[in-house]
Length: 475
Ligand code: BG6
Image (cartoon, rainbow, N blue to C red; front, side):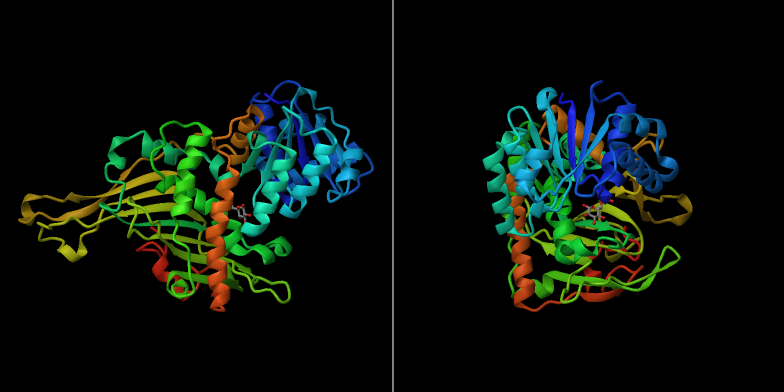
């Protein structure tokens, strides 16, 4: 296992909110090697390593509150050093970084994508990408297909793909990995997992949080690029991919790639019917009044997107996949709902055929984790005379007592150990961007602007048909 972790973007939100707590938890659980070292790098100057450590500790504690493990954080800080440098200057970077990569070095670029190439070049100049050093990149990889290709090509000149780890933190969530277990560890589901039995699939990532504090980044990316290109398409791939023959990285990634390549591109003719863009206005979320999204001047970006996607292959032809995500929605909920076709011949008087509820498989990923299979069940009782059916949820809850790990913990361990399965390959990223670009071009061609919605609602009125059937509160 590699022992050294070089973190770029050490003063950013992600570092304090996720990266540092994740590393501290791994240390506490003795999952990192005894010689583990964290080298933190960013542009801001601090008077000393101590000043940086004190500043970072305070930030982490402020964000984590009571959940913070102070001892683990102290341990991590005692292994941490800090370097200030302009990240856009490869030569300066190479001259300033004083890291000896001999015990295995993992460099993690938790920075905006326009810094990936200069940092990678600086690392290469400094010899910090020589075998066996590894490079890990935070999403998003670029802003469209063209910029992603430029990044992937420049990275490939610095380090081979076998030592590159593109991180999508959704793949580190235990519940997301459970999708593989659910689909391929059971015969039951695979037997009905196709257009023959499935009517529609809904993937929803609803957030109550707003853009607050990230306007600069978000105004250039929006919900389509921030959430759909990566997290939501990864979920879609895991639901839709063919069973891989093994769980090794390339076999799984090849299966996901086939799904991405089968996504039907959007065009100007269908985009109005198959998508909705929204932007939140002032409103009330969780009993708190919140402001609307303040765009940078001249920008018009969405904080909500609803899409009807089609996968053009034998398994999924004709099955709509509804992808909906937004900020400042009514509740926080990430879920996948698989709705099956109605029974082909209805025998029962009560309820009548129209009221019969088709089977549904509801996979809740967060905030709570559970899987529910909705079946029809009989309420037979002698006094009723007739047989009456009602929907019955079969609950497959995971014990709530189990401590949930930060998604980054799993991914950091995998990258330090050189395991690629839960990371995204260059061609996957490009295939995802190709599809996203088709949506963006169709929006541009048709001058589709984001429609306002009140914070705390379920998005613009036009998006309601994209939400799971009984949502007002989804599923
Ligand atoms: C990040 C996005 O990748 O994922 C954020 O940049 C978003 O805008 C976040 O809020 C959601 O992650 P999670 O794990 O809270 O669902």
